[in-house]
Length: 626
Figure 1 (tube, rainbow, N blue to C red):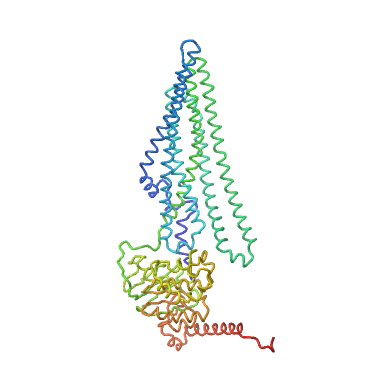
Figure 2: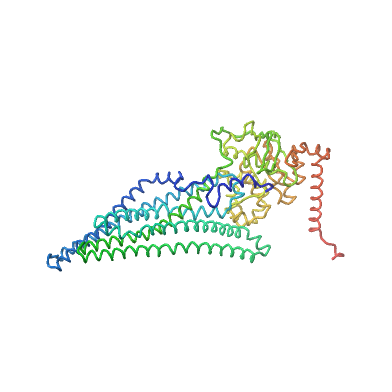
């Protein structure tokens, strides 16, 4: 690309992607209306799952009560004051088994319905995230890292799903069990219950310590994972350059450093995760010890029965298990909160170029394009200043200038890939900002400097944007772009899968495929941004000859360097320092002897030298000189 939106878009990317999530735009995960909207959408599933869980939790407290009665009956029988029968004991056992079966079914239903809803919400969030990423303008991607975005689309979404699915179930279960169990124990004996939970403040403080550190370390892991993903993606995409410059060892060394940093951060996270459960176990064991000591003394003194003591012990065991899991579940929830925050950072990034609130309908445009006092700045750097240029419908205008003069930026203004800071771009007399982006871009066949091709067949790449084209349209596009001559070289012709980014095609073939794509679109406006730079001179002349017929009656904006392209334009506009230095017909500008004359003669000399070299390569060497 000729220019990069470093300044303007850096501000957007920095605000949107602040690593610590501390910018004013980023609120807590709980305040995200998008998450709440989906939770409300599936509220009945969550509510039914919650009630099933509450019921299962209540049922889980029945076996300790049954055991209490069984123990008391057995104790009385041993003392001779009672007579427990085998059928009574079997009844107690049947109640426990039946309760366990019903409890298991309810827990299964609860987890399945909530986890299923979490899967649906994950699906909606992934769709929202993908749609929002596609709606963001190209400036966002100048600063955003591909690996980081991929990490948010995959790993972070999985963490969110775990948070609003299994973690929600586990947190709800733990809270219900703790509340119900604590109330149950209070009903049995208030004094022993309070003594048994005397260690609870220490549990809360320990949990807060681990949660804080796990959240911090998890964020560091996710950030490094994004770096590692980015490095892997670049290594795969840039494999040709890596091998061409024999940089395999250097890339492996760099990857090893990133991988080692990933391991270091993951190990730090693992230390806190590993320490959480043993700490909870040790603390809950203290509560059990208190219950055994004081409860045992109360049994000996006759203050409570053995059955009460056994019931308290069983309930305490259930609560201790839940307390141990609460720490782990809350830590998992903290990771989910971090993931939601990272996803929100992208979702809350505003699109710098968006559809108007009330777009004006647009049919097929006539093609008159006007730049009216247009100024474009990237950050504080002006790229185009005070551009006033009117292109009549059906005219062909060439934009000329040295590197970095704003030619590509001017071309990007037509399909609204860039918006001016000042002034306006008009299409048929209407400000293009009043037209929907889809309607506007349907009017423009745009061929950028770097042609992106998908890992699909050549036909699918050419038909991108117009899948309903017939065979005649394909044939015309292929012949005009001179790509038809190369089809025999491809294994399956036009149906050949060309690999990621068109790796199986040459640079010139990629450009011609992009030209064919634009031609198949049949637009009223054609924008060619140095679209023939990788094509040899002979092929370029043939393409231009055939393009003249296609360009007849269409507005064409051409950014070019080669003299043959310049000579065929109706008008030539010369940019210098982001301003229009000259404009006029080819011969008129040559006679002036100004900037265009200098650029043209330099380019003509360069092309002549290239032709001489090509001639030397093909000219046979006389026998006397061998």
